[in-house]
Length: 407
Image (cartoon, rainbow, N blue to C red):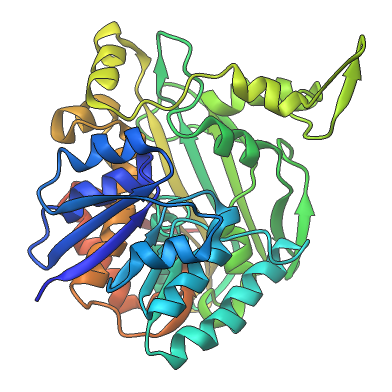
């Protein structure tokens, strides 16, 4: 009998996972759930194995009702809902997959992740189930790529992860995914491992420049709030050869749009008063931004208008020693661009990479490819699990190219 999956959240990530799982022989039923009735209905009508459910993610009982009898819950909701979805998964004894990690369990984000590893990990292990967090492109594929690069090192000193998103539409469209999530990432505290200790860094700071393969010119990337540095910082000794310094840098259209707003205080989330009017600057900015395109016709309309550019880079640089010599392991990820993604699958490049990479973690669940239980982040896969994941990715033309360079 095939697997039953609950996909919570029918935005860019969740809808892509649902569409890919609709093609899987080992999947019997997909329950597509959200509070947005239109999004649920639009998704279900294009799938063969799906049924819809309208779920209040603030209510554990509502989630449990939708999840009754499922083998896996895929959580593609904003990260604040994660504890309730985790509790529901434990209650119905289902596996769990999340695109990120919650930050609501403790004021210090690394402690939130430790709570997930330790407390929730013990509970999932006790019922013989697996929960994996950080399962999109970044985090997700980025974690797999970085973990995979450790094969080429005996010891690791520095890990630098970089994402450059250079897809620019002719219309005003600063983000190809949720503007709320994007700008939250642009303002949240950023973390880095510095001399073996996890520390906060300033968003939009500590710039680096690179001229990446396939890009027209040199680009600048800055500190950015992302899960990878927290995961890898906590797992530096067990999975990353004793790494001392780990950073995540981000650049591209979204950064060029958001950095001036951040510096002007327009992404502040505290109430302010101006000329007798009370408002939250962050909310005002978000309310004026176009939503991420997710329906076929609206994506086609944007592409028909034309793109200013369609480029990007996804790169890991890991330095350390191999056989007593200093080396750098440079890994590039290659994937279809925005226009090619639409031709292939009717989705954007963002949906293709993040959603497809996310769907491969789901594919591994439905094919029983994992050998672990408990709660893991995606950087904690075994090399064998990484290889299975990368083999699936290669069939979608999502590939890694790794080069070991002497230093």
